[in-house]
Amino acid sequence: MNPRHILLAVLVAAIWGFNFVVLEMGLNEFPPILFSALRFLAAAVPAIFFVGRPSVAWKWVVAVGLVLGVAKFSFLFIGLDAGMPGGLSSLVLQSQVIFTAVFAAVVLRERPKPVQITGIALAVAGMGIIAWDYGLSSPLLGFVLVVAAAACWGVSNVLMRYARPADTLRFMVWVSAVAVLPLFALSALTEDMSAITRVDWAGVGAIGYVAWVSTLLGFGIWGFLLRRYESSVVAPFSLLVPVFGMFSAWAFLGEDLTALRAAAGGVVLLGLAIPQLVGRRAARTAVPPEPLVPAGR
Image 1 (cartoon, rainbow, N blue to C red):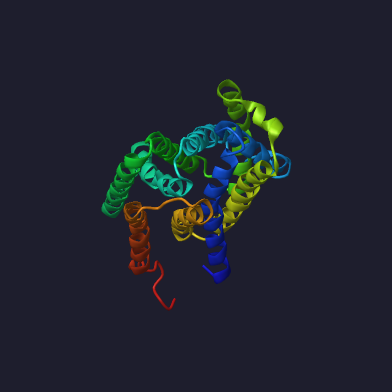
Image 2: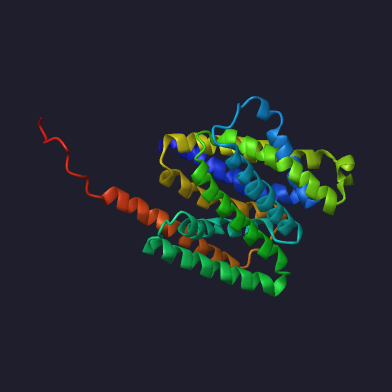
């Protein structure tokens, strides 16, 4: 990657990491499901009128919209509202890598390599330590809900492998549109929606950031990079998201980060990084195939 594109990848990681701080601010203004509904409404309108029709079958748009847009973000926002710290959530949510590997093995028959199994084992061990340490001082519900959000993210990753959208931004705009009505319906059934009538600039700013900066700008840049580089080159930058998330939560929200949680977080990141690093090294050292045409002809 050239230096400018590296900076873009780091910028997206920073945007998505800081997103967890903004989510906590937004949850001070709105109930969790209503906040999620407003986020997707703002992301879909008016963008839906400019991006064109999705380039994949509607069944994939609807499926990802329900799993990623409705289920994942409902679990995540309710988990944050239940007391799960935003910085820690940014780390735990990365366990989607584990769920993706497991679901891909079951559904797509992708056999994980030994290095992937090793990485998953390390990440699971780190997550277990975090769950134990977190459970000592806080209700475990928030942690469990964020893990459920990560599992939904894993399912949506498998669905997106089937869909293979050519334009990530266009796909995410339509996914956002699919999620709007179910989320508003869930909010109407389970929450007090009167917060809409009391919205202030903090609430508007939170919706604007998570919809336009995190969703549209973030996925727009990410899709731009994925169109120019292999996913194995771009994907490792997502490991910076919890780094920015935990630092932002410490800096702006004053979240306590115990030494044990920090160490366990390092174990999780190591487990997620090992398959990426080993895979890239193997690709660089692979012996090229014999040319079909003899050299010099």
